[in-house]
Length: 387
Ligand SMILES: [Zn+2]
Image (cartoon, rainbow, N blue to C red):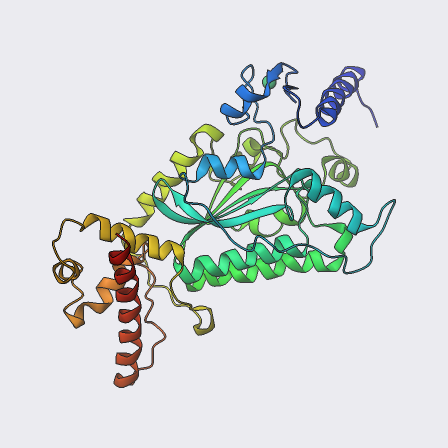
């Protein structure tokens, strides 16, 4: 196969700068741009969301920084923080898989290659999962799969908009078939979320998004956003070239190429991502002809912290009332027939009808409604006493 000398030199140069980056110590002050080689002051680079000042290239960003940039201050509530992988098939190469995990955990201070949780994005409650490429190449093992699945189920129960930020080398080979199974598990949880609950899922593709992640949830987004010039693909470029015996176009497997071929909806620079998300959600919220979602009975659960936070805000808005009864009247709690609308007011996305599964038997209906009613009153009472 013919490779021009110039492109070979170019490649060598590139891999050299990339290696230098990898060798730079965590405490160091300077780094190099992977694309143009410009020396960058890390502090300023982080303030600029890891975008190169010289060429606008989007450098890799860790999950905590991404959360910090997307979620409103002090509203992040992590989920399943303690889930940590074990070595289910006793895998070892030069080191055992357990050792590799421990090294990665010490280096990155993460349990596995993803952080999940809920928070407010421009005051909109969202469920967010952010993959971290620095933890074993962002590979998807059973913990990553489980955390994503739980996040999706949580979002479906609570009616949150779901956002997953992908950065992954694919399935984690050290867990063999167990990591491949995650693809099916996540996809079926997403099916309930998207097709039964009729909720909105954003998939954000960052560089690199490859392998099993591309083959499952990354490409299942209702809306798929990508960062500029991101590497997104399934198999590696060389593998495809050698299989097809064909030269692939220069920009093959970049987000621009995907956009041209209808595989993603929008390319958005990192600095505008938060705004783009919140504006899209707001437009979506007001769209007509939304169908009411139905949830399978077993995944409905009571209120969590964020729902309470919504109640608290409602309370603050009505705070100027003199006494509790007047305050509750403002909530229109007094009229029992208003139950449905009251509860829906607390659920940000009104497309979820939380009473869908209630038995038609009147007495039972009454009982369940009044339990809900009491729960809200109790939380309001606690809040009233606190303030
Ligand atoms: Zn640059």
